[in-house]
Length: 167
Image 1 (spheres, one colour):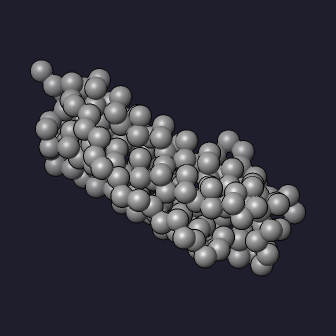
Image 2: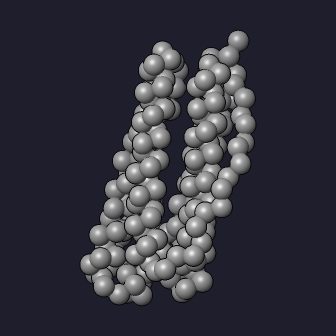
């Protein structure tokens, strides 16, 4: 007998699609940045790409552990024609806000369905999204402060899920 309802299983499969799309989006951002010689920022978003893949795996593992079924849904192509660094950091921040909303929707659905098993998993993602939004917001603010994308790139490094600046 499955510990996960069909409705919640479907919702988690939709979230897996969101996480994989996030990875795809960040991979595209990473390579746009690298193509334009913003190598530190490119590496920052490549790390983000890998984190999003890990998030998708975490949901997939949960589904399997609770007797559900993983269904990989189609992904849309992400935007690849970025204008500049500012557009990328703003889009990434907006995307993290979108994902936070999706995680909150899962929490609400789990409560409505009286599914208590995913509480720990969902709390982990709630905490993760706080970190993700803070990091993205920090990049937006730092990019504005530098007024020069090459200097911003030169002084931006990713260490253990956060940004640092050598000012």
